[in-house]
Image 1: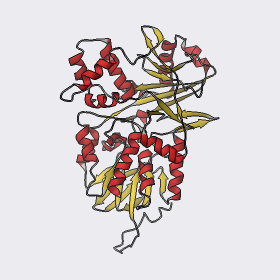
Image 2: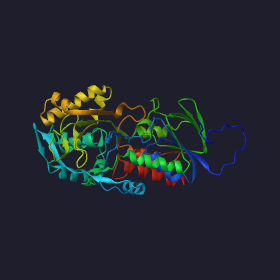
Image 3: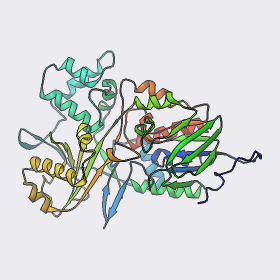
Image 4: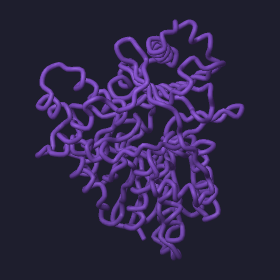
Length: 430
């Protein structure tokens, strides 16, 4: 393998280079966007542990059918995401369809989010000292009631957040800014990844997949990287874009050891919440759900289902987040499918065997089981604000961090958050 000047034996000889070198760990959207913006300032190499780039963006196309394993939606007209798509010449499609809810044994069309939701937001807005969602609900909605369970279920399902850990102020910030329209990327999100890769090739950036970084030895403006296969690379600067789920661990497959230690940074990463999600995609020979259904919400393990209106009419996607996903982490794909079909059978009132007979293809994406990601996306705990302040501060102007988990805006856990974090660290490195 040719690392094109990034693998240089240290012989004491002075090497004069026109640009400083930068190694980026992680080829998710954050790493790719950062490299795209910084290519004129550094000689750049990207190392990605997985056998593909894109991170939590992964589109599978089979016989013309687009299946999104990871990121799928643009929640609102998010400026950074839309600007990047426009630059790439990639279109979007506005999502259509009504919301249905399975409740009390019936599937009914629903006009509003949840009865009492507006009052909940008012109480969250007026809350004084920040607290966890569980503590907040126990105070304002004491006792065992269905509304409290509904709110906790939404936080777990949509935000992948543990109600006993997630910050109420962060949820209010997000929930109060939610826009009505959602979009999909035409052809799938990986079209954007492919465009970025092609642009990086033009800019001379080197991208290597299947290269898991295990060790970083460093001093100011002097980085030595050792991969899992004992390859060594050298650079002046390092940008780490792995998920906070991996950055906060010290013994996992996707974790990195730093010498000298940067314990404060890794402890900070551990203070940012990171939720699990299991996603199934079912292809049917004919629809067996309400023809105008966009989203279906329930109390089942696979709490949320959505169609592909106005696109593929024969696809239904199931989503299990939070505790439901954690419970399935070690299950086989067949066991997960059994849970999914049981959930859908209850919701649609169709026997499981009939649903299975109607399917032409099934896909299971167990994100908590992934070696290098370990879940879906981040959420804010009571410790997240101080943790993000630490991680957004470089280590001696030598080691930098970025990723959706370091974002503090109104759209957490999104591609928008990943792009925003990339552009933040670009300003620090330019």
